[in-house]
Image (cartoon, rainbow, N blue to C red; front, side, top):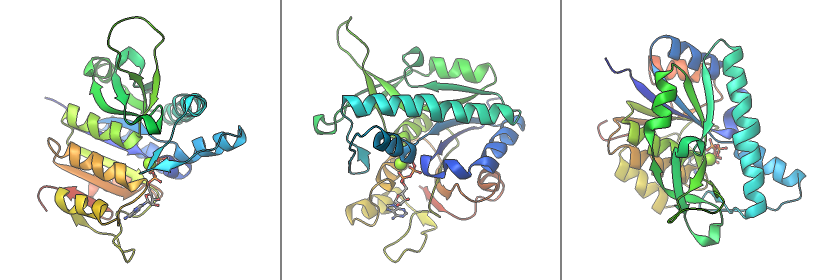
Length: 263
Ligand SMILES: Nc1ncnc2c1ncn2[C@@H]1O[C@H](COP(=O)(O)OP(=O)(O)OP(=O)(O)O)[C@@H](O)[C@H]1O
Ligand SMILES: [Mg+2]
């Protein structure tokens, strides 16, 4: 029997308050589910860039990434954040395996827009390295650093910074996951008056981007949900700062915002 696959995006902004969610993750894995974790680390990257005197700015929720920024993004995301997450899950008794999109050429990307620098989009996923990790019984913990697609051989490999939400959405689609869950630092998608919207169809969600109600870091999340919903039943955006957010999500799925084809 194939196990239920969940793709869980852990927002960098919710990282500091994740202790109970990581314990939940271990419990869900031990109960026979197959979680795949993708993480961000936006706030930590910004603070390391500041420490190193590198200015940063965002366009449509994506960080403009020059060569120096790319080095810091890779060091912080694929290094510090990824290893701390794997260390915490391991200390909690879980089996976690840290990787990025680079390992085994797992996720390749193209430069999205030269104006954004080393930012990748149009992801191509080779599921083999991931499936090997899953088959070996690990929770993959994935940092969204990807390898640039190249035509022709040779030359140095180029790293690209891909938004974690985009990686989570594409992975959920490729894996035909049962569910895509975003743990973030807000209670859900809010309307213009700040109230959480419990349910959105993909079309309604798209409309919120056009109208500007969804902005900044919420844009790539909504876009990832819309993409994944081609094959995935349901996508959820929930508050990762609340105690046992993940366990509660799997028990009753209350709170936050559901984006789905059926209500
Ligand atoms: N309509 C909206 N409802 C809720 N949040 C919104 C909305 N529009 C924009 N946002 C912003 O989106 C943010 C969440 O995205 P953000 O990229 O900051 O976090 P994350 O993706 O969880 O973390 P990371 O990028 O580090 O992985 C919220 O903190 C909020 O400021
Ligand atoms: Mg984000």
